[in-house]
Amino acid sequence: MSIKDNVDKLRTQIESAATRTERNPDEITIVAVSKEFPVERIEEAIACGIRIIGENRVQEADRKYSTIGDRVDWHMVGHLQTNKVKEALKIFDMIQSLDSLRLAEEIEKRAGKPIDCLIEVNTSKEPTKFGISPNQVFDFYENIAKFKKIDVQGLMTIGPGWAIEDPEASRPCFRMLRDLRDEMSQEFDRPFSILSMGMTADFEVAIAEGSTMIRVGTAIFGPRK
Image 1 (cartoon, helix red, strand yellow):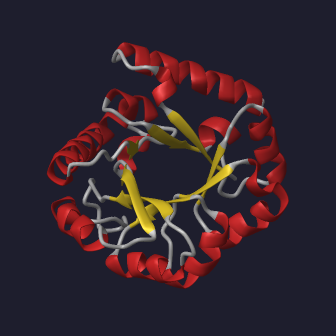
Image 2 (cartoon, one colour):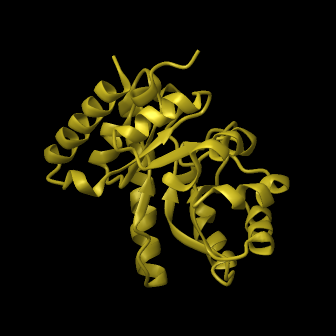
């Protein structure tokens, strides 16, 4: 299938998933994760209406950004090392993987203007995954709320590794993130409007649980080599 076919199919699936839970499909933002895919494929996706590109590595994003530039928004969706923050801030419009106080301090130090961020939460509690522990999210936010260069827009999570075979395995993780967001909104008296959860294997489950942003690569670009 072509990228256009894939994007059309993805939008149909989003509409169906949203309709099943009486949600508006327009509430769901697509982030096309282009890790390991060439600029030519990204250009095709942009021609199909994709407006946000997600990348996992700063160096790879920098190469692609030098060609594509600001025609789209760029989101950092992978783990961001503190020594890459300076370069990342030149490229990305959002850091979805804010996962430590040390990283937050480096962003605060390096950023020339406020940048939108999502707090990454390790809802699956897998030791191999990055992210703040769910029971530490409130304290973490309180520690960074004073920073002037970090604008927390919401939360992000990744379902368990076995969700590739069993998408339903992600449901408790997504439900936990939604509940955390609701509790934070009440506690801190401000909206955290973005729930970034759901990838190619489990985005329909994520939408059912309240996702407002899905991060999909294979569903748009096809399998990675």
